[in-house]
Amino acid sequence: MNPLWKYLPEDSPISGKKKKLKIEGKQLSSLPPEVFGLEALQVLEMSPERESCLSFQMGLVPREIGLLRNLTVLYMDSNSLKAIPPEIGSLENLQRLTLSNNFLASLPVELARLQKLRSLHLANNCLTDLPAPVCQLKKLTFLDASDNQLETLPESIKNLKRLETLLLLFNSLEKLPESFCRLRRLRSLWLGYNRLRRLPSGFGNLENLDWGRSHCSCNFEVNPLECPPEEVCRQGPERIKQYFESWKLM
Picture 1 (cartoon, rainbow, N blue to C red):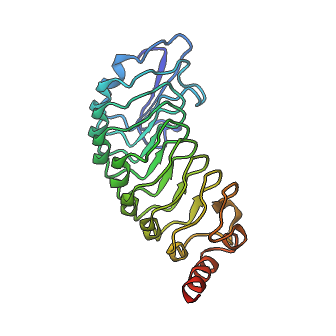
Picture 2 (cartoon, one colour):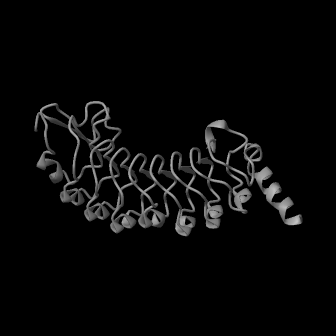
């Protein structure tokens, strides 16, 4: 076993019953090629920000990543990644993928093959649009696209019908598509620090949204909201729905 990295077998008391690899070691300057021979691997941590993980930043993800077809969790936060190889689409058992704090401006179309993915972390990258493959991940329940350069959201965001948490803080969004209002399972939605002047007229139909009931479930501060005004938004989706209905009667 390479002394510079650690493989936790399934019967390890700290592995959570999963075959887990945490790449670590201050002497490492690249990924050990032996990693990609561990076909039974389920959890792979390659994030410098995580304790005892990489002491260097990856500039690219080896195409051999596609060999690890049993992965369910893949951490690659806080590296220097500008692209993700199409082989990521081979990881069809993946349920959690973290790519925050990189330099990604796009994602490969093959990402759409990750139909078991439930949690996707894309915060603090260089995205100007929400990549189309993301909107094809129909089992996604958590999406963090905060701190990018998003100006619009695609109509196809309506496909994320299982989404419960959506974080969009610190972007440049000027509007939300009307199809956004079909995300009926949303409970937590953070929109703070954008350029939103109005919400779509069907926004009040997001009845599971905890706005107005749980402070930690919403954030829409530092938006030039006019329709509805901020004081209405603070009262939750029911009050927002009443606001738009009253406009129809005028």
